[in-house]
Amino acid sequence: MPRVCTICSHQDVHQINEALVTRIPLRTIASQYGVSYAAVQRHTKEHLPQLLLMAANAERAARADSLLDRIEALQRRTEEALTKAEESEDAFATFRGISEMRRNLELIGEITKELDRKPTLNLSTNPEWLSIRAVLVGSLEGHPEARERLLKALEGNGNGIP
Image 1 (cartoon, rainbow, N blue to C red):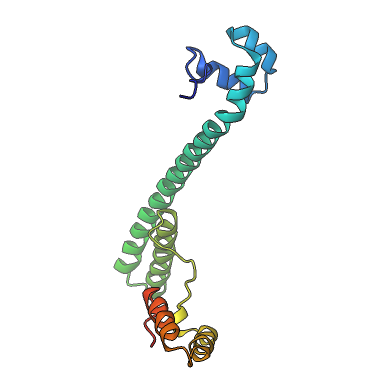
Image 2 (image 1 turned 60 degrees about the vertical axis):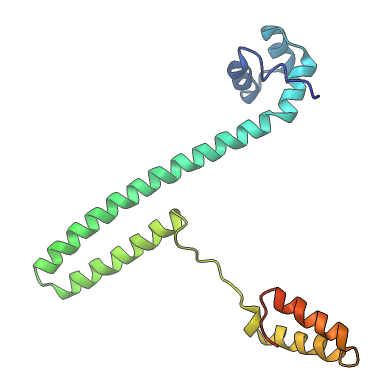
C-alpha cells in the first residue's frame, strides 16, 4: 500500500503549495512547516504539477465564462439594434444586424463547443483510399478466404463499399 503524502495530508498544505509556487526554497519550506526536505521534494515532483494543471484549467474555464458572458451581452445589444433597424425599415441596417448576429452566434457556438469547425475526412469517398482499397482487395484475388476476411474487416470499420 503506497504511503500517504505527508505534504498533502499536512494541515498547512495550502500554504505549503503557495510557498512552492512562489519558489520559496524547499529547505526553507521543510523547516518552516516541520516536514522533511525529501517529502517537500517528492510532493513538488509528484503532486504539484497536477494541482497547477487543475488551477490552470479552472482559470481557463473562468476566462471562457467571462468571455461568453461578454459575447452574450454583445449579442443582446445586437438584437436590440436589429429590432430598431427593422422598425425603421432600413434594409441595409437590418441585413448588417443579421450578419452581426450570425457572427456572434458562431462565436458563442465555438466557445460552448456546440459548433465544431474541425475538418472531417470521409474515407469511403476519398479517391486515394478507393484506389488503395482496390489494390488490396485485388491482390487477394487468388486467396478467397483472405479476401473475404479483408472485406469483412474493412466493412466492420465503417467502410461499406463492397
